[in-house]
Length: 467
Image (cartoon, rainbow, N blue to C red):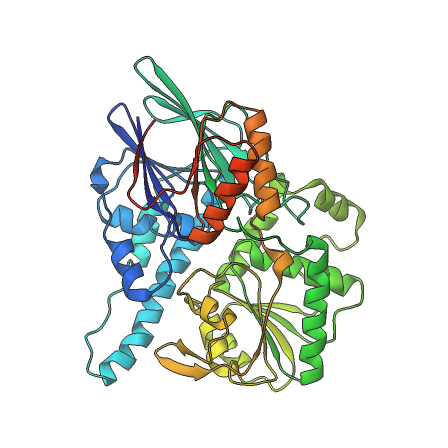
């Protein structure tokens, strides 16, 4: 039995881990690496293994850095099953098609600039037909049900509390007389967040692949989130500007809308329009409405005791689908809140809103999630004076803020608690930290070692471990 780390190794994006049992191969996640465009394209295009040697793919959840390179895998020759939870399957159908459309659209725009500069045009990583081919391979599995993606491996999904349908993946593996239990945490959610259940503690783990995104920092309390949104909205009204919230279409947008809805119901939200400018987010919100089995007890109680049964809609809110409607938002003269994808500002409609408003002091840009190294969102958040947007440099004059309490990732204390409780329910022998930049990952490794977890390491990309 072997384990090899090919993605999200000492970085946050591109989750992909290769498990080999009895000569067969299983891929845990197949995410899109995001960052420096040239480097990202090379990593995403060129798989470091024979694609046709993969027997099965098991997905933890539907964020693009965990599923976004599946169309490339299929285009390269993969024809096996792709296992996911029911909600993840439904979300992925929208996510992958949207990812393909964005890549094709952005390449058209960028190639216009490159053509004027006499440069060679770019090709998109994959197209809509590749995304459709990937979706046809999905097999939906409910939480807690045991399934065999390939001989010698039995798998169960446990709710990870990170986003709709997110899962920790427990693999019970056998090769001859050898038996091993491997737990892939996926992305671990925060306890007591709205909409979703808390992360489950999975029993019986011997080996753990664990995320470490926020391994060196603590989040603001979830309860502070509405106050941050309210203050940003009030400032925007006072400045007669725009509040732009880059947000992942899956999870983060719905959470932002939920909080704005609560502020509206409490008659606190300032009187200005709120636009969710993302066809994907609109489609994903419908998926959220269709999966109440993922909701926590608080939301069930809210829906049963409230006259307003739509937690993702209120009078001031409009979902923007068409490109013409989206373009019209950039000519608004009155204050407005615009929630748009992508969350790391690496594509999508938020780029056009940033292009038109980032140079205006009346604009507030409120980040609602993690910004990976080398992404546009990270450059803006780190205080760059000028940033490149769609082929041109723009001066940053807008006010930049971050809503720490909106993170859907567990912070350092919550990660430690998850690991310690997992150890108490199993016989943990080794922990591999992934999905974190070097400093957070190494910090968490020290924390977990001090807490009594054995053999905690931060594997580099390509490292092979004999299980």
